[in-house]
Every structure is written in structure tokens, then in C-alpha cells.
Length: 107
Image (cartoon, rainbow, N blue to C red; front, side, top):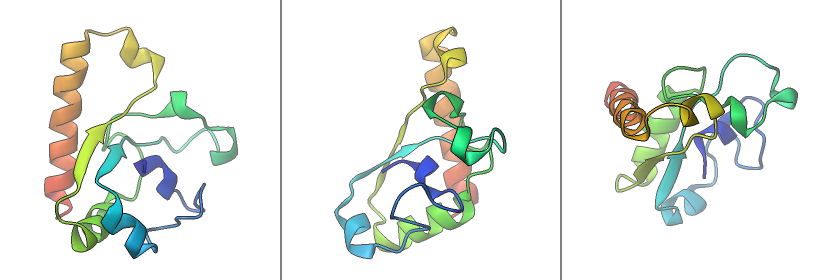
């Protein structure tokens, strides 16, 4: 599952984490964020940004996921071509730093 799927309104049937059994069986969250614009209907994978750089409701996502599955693994997933132009190691380091910050500030 991807954090970008938790938009309001949701882009999938998951909504803001209501499917407890699905989450318990889910070992990994592909973590990314999404900007306030373009509109949700115009957004695609290339708009994903680093965790914490957008408007994803991580306060809800992280707390609820942790309550249901405290062993969940977070994996950075970005399809934004701007990141592809940068040094991969630096992008990975920045992504890890941002993921740690988002998770720690929301537990």
C-alpha cells in the first residue's frame, strides 16, 4: 500500500485506514507524499514528493498503522523525475532522513 492512497477523498477503497485485517497482513508501506496541487483528479505518480514535503495526513496514517501493525516497514517510493536527475545516494539519504522525521514526529 502507498501513503498517497490516503488522500481525502481517498483514491482507493482503503479510505483513511479502515481495513484493519488488510493492514495487519500488509508488511510494507510505500512512503511518499503528495502536493496540494494539482487537483487529485489531475495528479499522477510523477507528482509524488518526499515524506513531509506535501499534505499527506501522516498524523493519522502513522498512528493508525502503528496501532494496528507496529512491525510495519516503511519503504521510500518516488516516481518524480526531478529526483531521478539527482545523485541516487543523496536522494536515498534525504528520503531516509525525511521518513524518520515524519514517523518519529507522529508516533
